[in-house]
Length: 400
Image (cartoon, rainbow, N blue to C red; front, side, top):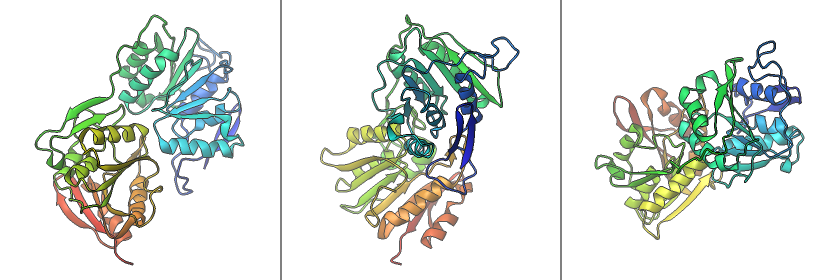
């Protein structure tokens, strides 16, 4: 747990799932910079004594929408000062962290309205706050979706670390919102100010996008892949998944297969096409990913094929001992931070979810050493295939 101090109070914040050993903060200098600006502590140039100086506090009495709030720091701080702020997030984990952080701060569950990127946004937005995401495509998609709700008086402020804000970022705000400028950097963070232009029209949506996998894609050859904004390698098959598809196990008839961290659902869809009697559960913490997986599955699987689509925390929602096969390409980044915590949670969750004799198949970069984690959890890990960059591992749950 770590504390964010603002002029509105101090907040003890955590990521989700909460882990007392986790050294990563649930807020950043970019969040703190934006909150200071909203409270009138920072002028638009970001520094007292320079042009812009200290500005008046931003009027938060209208509809305030917060996009991309990573762990709920912004929403939690605003809950007592805005009229039911609306959080819009692509992350199930961020949404759960927000609920926990709001409760910890003493706010009622209805102190903020929590929406996903797949939900209908507010019809009118008076203050739009944007925590710049890692994915430029996701930023484009969200600005495009929200542009019709902006009006001439809407205050639009983005925030991010200097390394996250690029010329292309500003160009998106300029094209989809209106005239855009940036603040000075403070603690390696920067603010983005956009003025809505009522005459500007967002144009046609760029997402979702569809492509067909080439013949050298193993079990995925010929599949139609649908990607919503924010999905990794949205225009092509990433090389790790391509390698995994060439060595994908064939599920036994009627097996329960889980595509864990499913992304656009290529692995689970390939498993379903190969075995139409299988039941496939697609799981990802990204709402955009789960929507992509469902669209990919519907575009390829048999009409009577069975599937479930879950936005959640790894296998937490799957009953123990009910799965025959887990396919997993775990991420090793949490936003900008490199961490093995997500993979460990996926592997341990897989062991609990599998039946005795059930198998976990994992692909990862060779240097990540996933075989060590798997042997610790399962007591075994066999290399199925490898090349200079990737390794496919198989772990089997015993009867113990």
